[in-house]
Image (cartoon, rainbow, N blue to C red; front, side, top):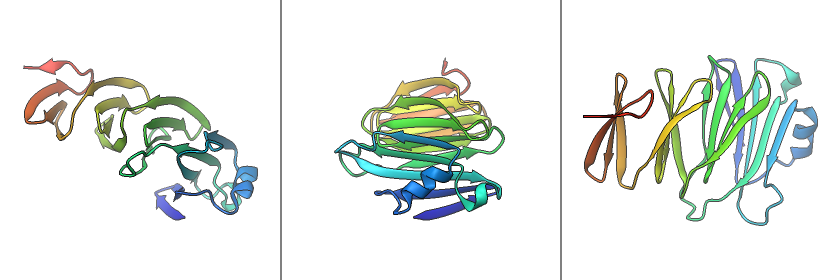
Length: 181
């Protein structure tokens, strides 16, 4: 298991199995979200999250799931937004967002073929996947997304997103996805 500390947040991550003391984690958590863990197929992902030194050293939020990674080439990714206490999670084709203060799942979404990663640009959360690029705001609201096809890349300059999809470069307004000339 990997433990990561960022400011007041601590994350416990185990990709590929559930911890041997999984039952104890569940017993001590304030929010437990188990998704498809009894599915015969897929890969386990365990995520425990705490803020500060509360909950007697146990994660207060537990997210345990099985996710599809058919080609075994996609890794899970997480982005914590301290200002709004949200965490964005991507694994396989599943995307999730949680409010860690309220201890509630805000939404579940999917992306086809596989998730690549999260990044942040100003007040925008950016999601890269095999066949999709998406933008959310810091409160977890999805603003827009677009189809992409590998090889593709992106860069953000001020409020403009530049997508290079197989050599075709297009520019979009980051806030709403309106195509720029």
